[in-house]
Image (cartoon, rainbow, N blue to C red):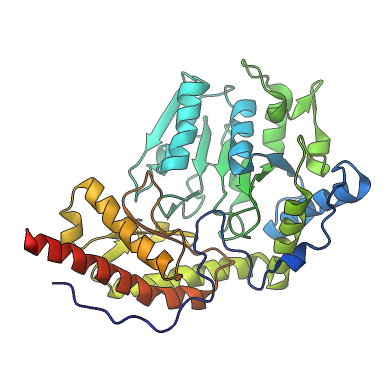
Length: 395
C-alpha cells in the first residue's frame, strides 16, 4: 500500500514548467516590452534594425561560425525545418533519425509528402536513440538533437563523419542555448524563440553552413516551392533573409521579447551559464529520481537524458498493471492535481509519448523552483496511487 505523504509547505515561485511555450526569464514583466516598435512596418529602418539585432545577438550567444548564415523565418521551428527539407532534400539519399514524435513527423514528411524513394528511416522507441553509427556519411541526414517529447538527447557529434558528403539537418529547437551543438558537424540548425530563452511563439530561426548554401545554389528540387519556403531568387541566395528582411510579416512585439531574452542570457553569463543552469535542473531531478521508488527517467541511457525536456515514467507496479488508457488517465490525474494546487502547469507527457510526466528544465527555470516542485510530485503521486489502490481493493 502506498504511504501517505505530507502536503509540502514550500511551493515553486514560478509554476510554469511547460515544454513550450516555456517559462519567461526570471524577473520578466510586460514593462520589458515597452520599447516595442508597434504599428511600424517591419521593412522600415528601425524595425529592420531590431530584427537584425535578434540575428546578431543569437549568433554571438550561440557561437555560430562566422561563415554561417542565420535568418528569422515564419512558423516557428516547424517552419524552419520544413523550409530546409523542401529546399535541400532530394539531391542525395537521406537517413532520418526517428525516436520521438517530432522526428517521426519529419520522417513522415520526407517519406509520404516529398515521397523520396531513397529515404531510410532509422527508428528507435521512446527512451532510446537509433543506431547512430548506421548513418551513411554519403547520405543527407535529418535529426532532432533533443527529443522534446521523449527526453532523449544526442550526447555528442562524434558519430558524424568529418568527411561526410551529405548535409546534416538538425532540429535543435529544445537544445539551442541549453546544450553544446557541434556546428562543425552540422549544416542546418533550426530552433524557435519559445523554448530555452522563453520567447513568444510563431517565429523560427534557420542557420545554414556554407555547404548548405552551396546546395541551395546548385540544386533545384523537383517539386514546386511556395513563396514562404524560397531562399533563392534568380539562382542567387536571398541574402536579405539573413539580414532581417523576413519573408513574411513578423510581430514586432515578439521581436522585442526575443531581444529581452537574449539580453538576459548575455547578462547571466552567456551560453556556458545557460547550459549550466539547465544541467543543474537535470541534476536536481536526477538526485530525486535516484531515491524514488515510483518514477524513473524515460531515457534509458543516463548519457542521453535531456536537461530541458525532462521526461519521467511511472514504474510502480499498480501503474504498470493498468491498461494503456488507464495509465494515461492516472498520469494525467497527477498533472491535474498539481495544476489545481498552482504548483506546476502543463507537465503531463506529450500526447503521443508513453504516459508519465514532462518537466521543462531549460535555462529560464530556476533550480530552486525545481527543488520546490519535487516533494509535490511525491505528494500528488501518493494521492493518486492511494485512490487507485483503494478502488482496486474494493473490486
